[in-house]
Amino acid sequence: MRCVIQRVSEASVHIDGTLKSSIGKGLLVLVGFEVNDNSEDLTWMANKIINMRIFHDEAGLMNKSLLEVDGNLLIVSQFTLHASTKKGNRPSFIAAARPEQAIPLYESFLELCSSLSGKAIQSGTFGADMKVGLINDGPVTIVVDSKQKE
Image 1: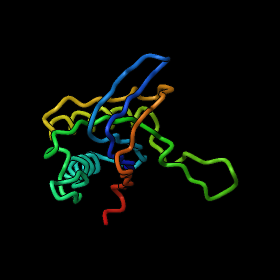
Image 2: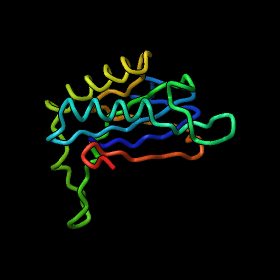
Image 3: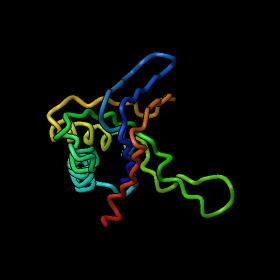
Image 4: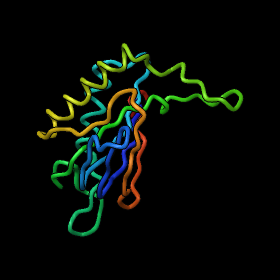
């Protein structure tokens, strides 16, 4: 499971020209699932995202979590996070979970993040052609992979 976490002052998802979801201050999380991902990956990643201290404190240091700043989450599925570019110029997505596996993982991840944050989670629509807009605050962008816990 791989996530691109972006601290934002605002973010939104449009589908077919219609606003699907939007948030103000918080995190935009692009999430991709691999074939071997499971509930342990979901739990580890949700806890990492909710508790990651990447918001400024009173001294201007990145010392506060999403919970501490009362931020919101917008979570968007993105299988292309598992692109392999080893050979040639066309990415391969063989490591990405197929929809029949990824959709239940995505839905469980949304529920888990909602439970941990105590808030409704905004989201994209799995498999849709989405237009994602954001104002990256900082900019702060962090990539986290549940298979590479550092």
